Picture 1 (cartoon, rainbow, N blue to C red):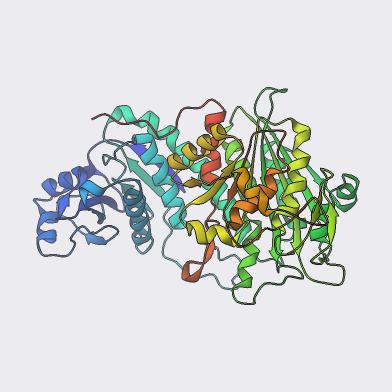
Picture 2: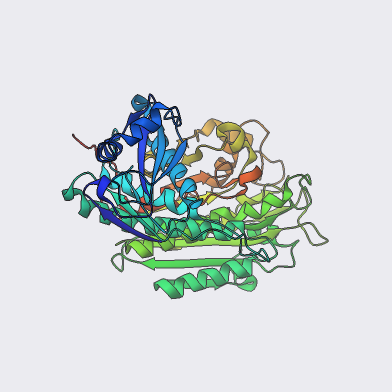
Length: 506
């Protein structure tokens, strides 16, 4: 996909399709008004007949609009003007892309990026348009014997800005948006692959390929190396699988040689049966998505490399399957973690925290400036926040605020959950230092409390993406979240501007 930024008259664009907006009440956006005037009020006449009311996400494709050189004009409903915000904007652009895919247009000019949006500037609108276009065009059909036939593919999208002096900011936003979109696409691709393909070994190979392409140092620790490190908690989860576990380490060196890195730790359970505490059969196929934390680490590192961020980043991925079997860990077993703390495993389906705790101990060697772990950790998180917000826990309020702000700018939002000492009381064991689960009450919080016991040496945050990493039903598939959030977090850490977040004064 090629993106371009252009200012000028929407009514004079020679393109396969020009996209303009209509608010509820059939009110034309400024670009739509320009086309309406040039076409002797053709758009107004169409709207007067009731073909489009302006409901958010509705579309109407027009051909042969008088006096307009574009082959087509696509009208997109924007909803109520007073309610037009970030979500409505992204919905409108997404609807435009879906409509464009049904046409034969190979290029289009989108005149939604010139709409006024409270609290956000041109750069924000352009970046999110790039992300919405990339999202709308993404398809995972590589494993079908006969991929569905489609019309002529959309190859070029021009994003319209209102003023010439906005072009430079728009072009920078395109580069940023493309980098983040590629990171999201990588995370989706890995998440969507089935467990018989995306094994721990496959994940390690993809990390090595990513490192080769972008100049990152990659080290893959094998089972014997993991044993030498004393990662008894990680190895306990891996015991039931025939697939060998991998500890994947990537180092992106964009900053000064001795500058402390930001560490990203991603849960890499490539398939989760629950182990001996086996899951119900219904929807167990979705447990291929249990490595979406690992996928987001790889996607974020790819975005950071494409943006050439002047920052050091370390990605650590403990990767294994969680399977039942004769060698599998059993409820009641006690293991010793890399930190030396002992864990009584009361439920083998609470395995993510068991592999993460050893990885969180491992990253201490880097003396990191901050550590963020990303994991599809708890079903309780879905109950708490649904599929809209990612759960955020942290032992550092400043770090939590950074991530929350990054999520707002990326529109990949998180919600700050409590991590008070009161919740630690749920983790008590008669036989080990603590168990791997507490009671059902506050399950996502007690899981974070468990991880917090391994993160005393550095500022740390935990992103529970169990509700946001993938979608079910007819839209089943990985979302690529929270790559956008993490990318903006790293950009700000690298000293970049508060991207796309400036208030535009008109």
